Amino acid sequence: MVNKVRAFVEGHKAVVSSFFCSLLLFITIFPVFIHNMTIPRQIGAVCALSLASLYVMWLLKIKLEFVGRGIKWFTIACVIITVIWQIITQIRYHSFGVPFALWRFIFYYDKPFDVAVALTVVALVPTLFRLFLRGKRDTAEWRKTYRVFLKDALTAFSILYISILIFGFILNRQSSEQVTINLVPFKTMFEYITSDKEFAYENTFLFMGNVAILLPLGFWFAIKKKKRRILLTLLLPVFVSCLIEFSQYLLKNGHIDIDDVILNVVGFYIGVLLKACVDFIRKKVTRGEEKTIFSL
Image (cartoon, rainbow, N blue to C red; front, side):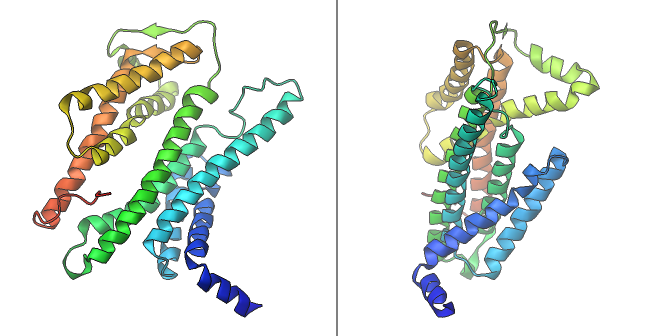
C-alpha cells in the first residue's frame, strides 16, 4: 500500500505538490473563523501561518511553479466554496423568512481581506528573493521558474480581486430608497479626519479601502502595458472609479462621493508607482542588466 502511494506521488508530483500547497494555504486563513479575535490579530496570525507554510514548502523542496499553481487552485477553491456555502446558507435562512439577498452572514469584509493577506505574503517572499538575487544564483532557469509562478499568482490575484469587487459593491450591500450624493471635493475626507474617536476605526478602514480598491489594478496595468499611453493612464482609473460609483447609483446600494473617486485614482497611481519602484530597485541590483522582474 505504501509503495502504491509512493508510486502515485512520484507519478503525479506536480498535482500532489500543488494540491498540498493549496491545503497549506487553507490552514493559513483559519484565524478568520475565530470570532473573538480582533482584525489586527487575525492579520498577524495569517501572516505568521503564511510564512510557516512557505517554510514547510521550502523544507519539502516543492518547486516554485507548483507553489504558484497551488495559489491559483486555493483561490479558485475559495470562490467556489464561498458561492456554494452562501447558496446553502441563503436557502436555509430564506426558509425562515429572511430575505434571500443578505449575503453578509458568513463572508463579511474581513474574510476576503485575510485571504488577500495570505496570498500577498506567499507571493511576496519569492518575489523579494527574485528582486534581490544576483550573481551565479540568478540563473536563467530560476528566472523562467519565477515567470511561471508569477503568471499563476497574478491569475489568483485577478480572480480574488474581481470576486471582491462583485461581493463588496453588489452582493454585500442593501438597496435603499435614497442615494446620497456628494460632489464637493475633500468634504468627506475632512469628515474622516475630524470625526469622533468612536468612528475613527471605521473611517480609517473606509479611507484605506477607497485607496486600496484600485491599487491592484494600477499595479497590474503597469505590468501589462509596457508602453503606456499618457491619456489612457490618466483616464482609465477615473473611468473605472466613476463606473463603480455609477453602479451604486443604479443599484441604489451606496453613497456617491467625489472623494471616493479621488481616493480610488490615488490608489491606482500608487500601484503604478509601486511597480516603477520595484523596477528601479532591480535595475540597481543588476546594474542595468535587467529592467524588471515582471516579464510575462
